[in-house]
Image 1 (cartoon, helix red, strand yellow):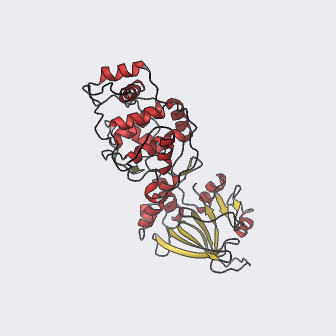
Image 2 (cartoon, rainbow, N blue to C red):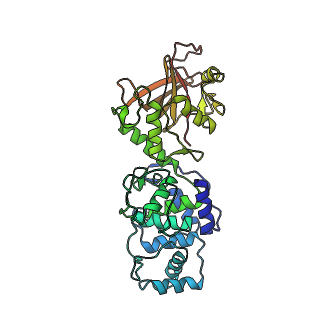
Image 3 (cartoon, one colour):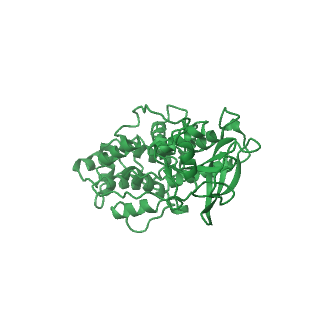
Length: 390
């Protein structure tokens, strides 16, 4: 669905420039740097940019109009002046053109009584409604049918921004920037920082989903759950490690290759999901051990050679202990020399039947935990492999 939405926005906004295709990378407070570069390179913003300053309604609609190619149809000025008494055709007419374009494309109807309020700061609910309307060519009165995920603090059908917020959540936008919202909450009345406005416009216009931020949020949430028991994540009291990991991923609307991370109590089923999307990296021993096992389908898995893969924060790590399979989330990975890797994890269903932290040193080629032994045997514990969300 996300690909369709991005294609719709690209057509509707008629962006004439070649979009940046680079994937966004989480880097602390500069998650928006690529978006700002894109906006500057395409003439959407110029001069000094203040990322933490709340964007005004005039700025937001102008950014969107410029992303659409700055169309200057005379009727846009007429529309703006006829509809709003606080919009004037001054200077080069940029604001009047932008507001008229927005009205023509059902992006905004103003605040009523002939007021657009160009100098007022933009709230998150207004920003997401503007972007939703441009992307879907719908007015805020049009029903939205496909609610893939529920936002807990949106309960009233009377809220004009409910439909746009659910659309944004379904497509991963609420979890893609800090302090904007997530799958369980939307912050409608918070002022929208300029960085967030530019980032969301860039993300929707170019089809770039900021997985780095969403994955970081997932890991931070998982870490915060230490010592909690299975009842918060699963009805399966005896095997809920996979439930915990997928619960954390679903909370931030994470996908692999546009396919949602599926909630499951089974390590094998979760492993298969990653394999089908060619995002599962498996040790050589585990591949040979499982390739003829009818209980799991590992077609699509990529064998780790020790050089083609390095675990990273947010990967799902799968274990083969002597009596069971298990899965956790990597919080940190560091090479330990001589083909060894040390990983730190957060896991559900640990000793004590709770969420807890663990660390392991293992052989990257064989997956054997605890030493550099190249002679696998059934009484050893193994890192089977890693599922990478993105």
